[in-house]
Image 1: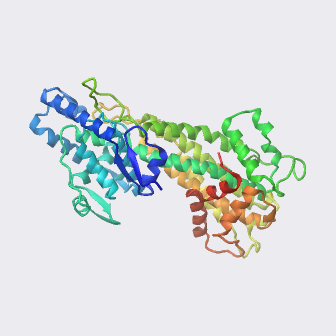
Image 2: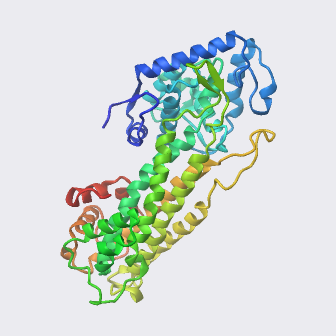
Image 3: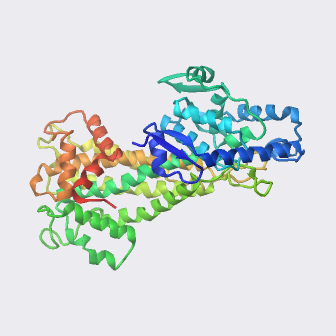
Length: 509
């Protein structure tokens, strides 16, 4: 584990976000970032001294941008902004999301285009490092003017307001800051706007979603291979020649993964031995899984740009002595990327659920009905397929794009919004559902193999089988299944299954 991640505004990686958000790594500002922040702040202070009219510094916000604010009212303006924007709804984000939000806001401010005080940034860093986690509501952002609502809930705690989780307990923001020995902040010109006008909430969710989606994508090939062997699939369909004449990169990679997983298998069959062709859910695994690869890669590239971007407004260009109002807060890039990610990931569950059906339905295989050795008295995995079907159906609703909608806000001043935060949250939920469906397939495939001969498995599939069987036993008689499927889901979600396979057959692409 990385102990400290250096923050400079430009070089943050997806893996950096993961170690901070999930593993609790601390962060530290680079010296260059400190200089950039201070330089930007001096420019703002000079503008104020010179009486320059700047949006959000000495004017109101949104439709009130024509209202002048006196020097004496500037601090109150920033505080009022936070109070008025903290109107979130629904459940609170998970702590890992909150930590990612804080990290990404710090990294954006470190670029030195926001005009915030270094001391204010250091307060947020201290909160992250000492694990003072603001309670941030999931709902309330329209994804343009940034994530105003969720980020305002973050800032409340910096002011000694709102609520936070500290040392495993939820308390008011003031108590959390006192217990962690972090002085609360008093916001000055531009600071409230600099803290909340950005895409950091949607991008935080998106970053975690993208990271998990790639583990899931590779795991889909790994789990499918075990099913393929349990059903004695026809290996000819994965022949490299087939895929080179339709050379989509994702398809080629997935076919290679399937060949590697099944290498040495005595369960797979050749064309004409048992059947001339397999059903699409087996034969077309590379084409189906492979099509999700470029879509996920696109989403990853968008996120990698966004986590190192300045997304607030206005932006301070100190070298040119300029302040420019623009639209970098607009979440459309993330919105479209997350809608795409959700659709691409949902399809992995669609085909996985159909493979589950082929494992359970005796009309489609040579296995006991619902994979139980004592049918009638036992139902086996019958209703596990119902649950998977339920999640797949829910994913169809969640995969409807959020980015195709827009509701104007702020008296039509902000007349097109992205709903990128909704798109990111939906994508993340889809991913959780897909993890569950693949976990269910894994449990069924291992049970099916036990009716065949596990010693005949390919080198990769054998690892999948043994990894699961260390934690979940063969089911002779019905037992409570949900906790066992929890285990299956966890070994996929955590990357454990993938890691074990890679130890034997090398890197899964």
